[in-house]
Length: 293
Ligand SMILES: Nc1ncnc2c1ncn2[C@@H]1O[C@H](COP(=O)(O)OP(=O)(O)O)[C@@H](O)[C@H]1O
Ligand SMILES: [Mg+2]
Image (tube, rainbow, N blue to C red; front, side):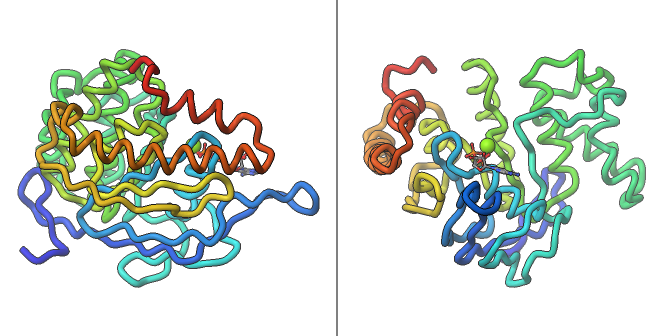
């Protein structure tokens, strides 16, 4: 197996991609209402690694993922996948958003097989086996014939994860996918997600504003500056895999957390002094030690 190839859950080989973001800038609006959201932002999503992007609410994370997915075009700068510039959306780069996007009139199973089925890519049996393998992995095998409304929020999110994965993207992108779930469900989701990643080793980009979640999941942590967003710091998170929640009490974890907090705090102070009065309050809300999990 060369470094570009990974095994899917069923043992078949999946190509994994590398994204290069160079000097990316994006603004919205015109004239005095123009707002620079991303400015001169450069980073790499390394092949087969789980990169987490963290930054406070409103700093431009979703804008960045929309650019990477090809839903938006940059004002300047380039995005390449395996050295080829992107030209709009492609099933090589799939995004799971925080809002549910399941078809309400389809069952779990029908939702999952929908993409490959309409493209007529696989034979029926093969597709069914793969869908059931993945549903089993996320604890949804028994819910294959339920409709989204019959699933809990966490189950819906797991179903979406599987629905994206079955398309074998080169790059999986997740935009705060577990936001809004209760603390217990969120932990469970992190565990399912990290196990899937450790099995597939697809290139993953995971966006969050939760520091603990970020460090728990990441191979690499990119901290965004306050708006206009750019990649302020990249931290290599050298914690053992498979990841277990017990790492959250190790001194290595606490060291990463301390380093990241200092940078995030600096960014909040910068935003505050440049006129964004809510920046420090946002920072405290997002990263305060006393915040209930
Ligand atoms: N399509 C758009 N048109 C105008 N402004 C936008 C658009 N999308 C995002 N923005 C602005 O860009 C800023 C960053 O938004 P977003 O990327 O959603 O932040 P985050 O995901 O980090 O919370 C916000 O101030 C938002 O109002
Ligand atoms: Mg967002």
